[in-house]
Image (cartoon, rainbow, N blue to C red; front, side, top):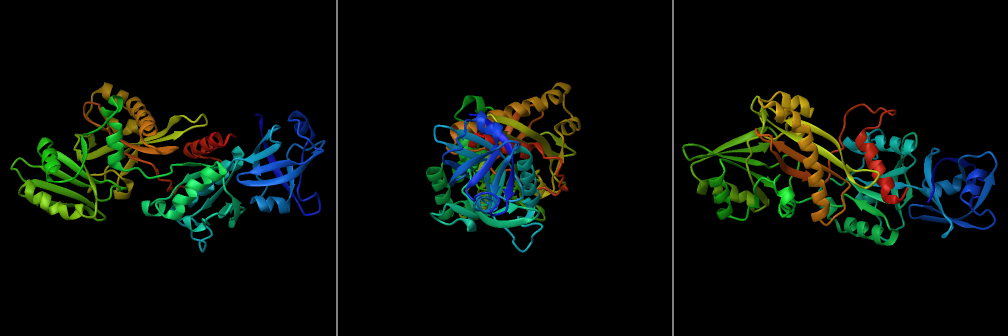
Length: 455
């Protein structure tokens, strides 16, 4: 099926019939679009019977303002178009929607908080690539409705009724919000009723990821030994087997709630726990006392207990790596970026939220006391491992993902380890918006949406 990018112009009521559209004569002939009988116009879930008028010198698409408003269109967008002669349907799009956690209508310059810049950048990318995007929160979902009161950008943010999109990107930042019955019902409904594609449809559970991926021999090599912490038996086994272990909340993020346990030569155990003020230290005389000390936390938090690794470091500050892996315009996984993260001075985790700093892979490994061959092969190994892990998530986790943040580590021998996988990679960015420059991660997100929607 042929596709074309068309600039869309809007005419005041009366200039053309409300349900007529004007297309260039050349395109009408090329696509064999009938002008003597009605056909269907589709934009997301929006459907309207229209007639086509061929114009000799026109190269875009002209529609009446009332029709444009019913579609949720503003400010002369550029859209992709396809025509199916069998169903006599002219389809415009892709229409993309992004489900976000909250909005702030009283802050017109930053209505989406820390991801406002990302939202504007996606709007700019859509204008350049021929797509249309809107943003909405769980509060905008109305059961059984064919439209959503979403946010669009038109020389400023405004809310307007929008059709259900071709593609929904789930950017909810809490499990509580994602598990709301209204949100779960919406995601099922838009797929079954409207054929929409929903990606990154759920959070990942750390233990689920490790349990599923370690069943594959080609992935098991990246996995530190990990178990769900179910009681004293597994706790004792891991603490006696490894000099350092980590307790990680199964549903945690941003390094919150991680506890590092180190066995000392005198038989005592030292713990470091992440907190907003830095790492909190405690000493326990033996394993029994230590387990008693953390068992209170286990009543409210499920933990994964994980083998401690001898990671490369810079000045005793551990280094790990975050790979952003996204599906591209062919629907296959590709690595968009890999950055090194160096832990903050008073923390043992590298998350930026905990005072960590970013560096290129090359710069980070060059600071470490490592053999030349380990330094030279670091990026290629991390690249390969992140792609393998992403494909493993697709193969073993029953959900649709389009982008993943994969945390990897490297030990002194150059071996790559997987630390965790995040299905909601951060979009927070405080760099000034450059309308001319769209980041590769945003371009790839849009490419995948076009692929999913058939545009």
